[in-house]
Image (cartoon, rainbow over all chains, first blue to last red):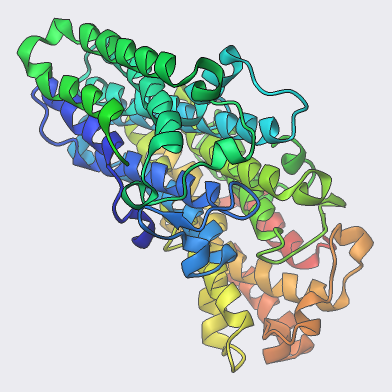
Length: 254
Length: 254
């Protein structure tokens, strides 16, 4: 479990801490750890031979390569459990708000969120026709978007404030993130990315790049970053770091 | 997910409902569903080829047989998520108590509970010497005991009452349950059990039966049932159904 949490960008944990900071809440660390544990579980399971069958992740062998499949299944399972346990930490404030976090994380990551996205992704591999842009967008909204959205909303949930502007920010950010991922899969350096690239093209999978072309995909990502930044206007200069993060998401190399 | 929840004894859900009833609490259903979803997830993952590699469960093909491994991994993942989401249901009472349920379920089922037990079980398969009675007892306390204990304690947590007598009841019950399982594995009817039997003996695995012999295992299970029943004395005749359940656990055929 510790190995699976090594490295990574920790974007989701960062979003929790920064969104909480908007409201002057400094004790969001257990929630940041929770989304990172949840994300790590999803990577460990997605990398399994029966799923995406990946050998490298975050610059090191995947868990089932370093140990074995049974260990990877169990480590992922227990990382998900740990995520929910972390959200019960009293440092996160009144029980009512911690319950809102538990519900929010469950809805973002379960059968109507992240797991749905992954299931659609796997179904697409054996579909007779490539996905359309609408279908890819829906798939992404589950697979990566839901947890990114929850991470950004978490600060508002902890503070008991309206999460609407953060939701708008994170919805655009999540889509920009996935478009940037598809661009990286084509143009990136596997060394810097810490994982194998070019897999989607090799598998003939529809991606934002295959559907829009590289230039249009880049333009779309850029306009989503602008949309994400605009959504944070209500918070004024306090939101500068979150706005920087949106720019980082589309310029990153890993 | 629905398929994986078919059938079974629903012992854990029953323990939640009956323990809540001791305190006059009639709205424990979401918590009962939560422990059943959690238990179903653990069965789906344990049955995977990389784990126990079972083809039948609850009288029907296992999820990875009826669909495929990726679907089984994802269905199990989302069943765990669902379990935690169900515990946020306002019908379960004040948020503070729902948080206690989330924490309790996480501790019972994660890296220091059920998943630890399963990891020890898998490690035992490749160990050079069979497990001792102490080691088997520790393994069982995690693999099946922790969730049974949480299920019985849940009623007290929902009612905001002391869970100590129920914990004592369920600790004895959980051990009796596992001893009965080992006896069933040797003497049972696969048709009635709804799964393959005789696997432990075939694999040369240490069990309560291989370590104690059939007669001593039966005597041990019987004395644990008496211990479980005695623990419920503080509740008087209200505990009759839970006491009946303890007797059922060691006489069941599935």
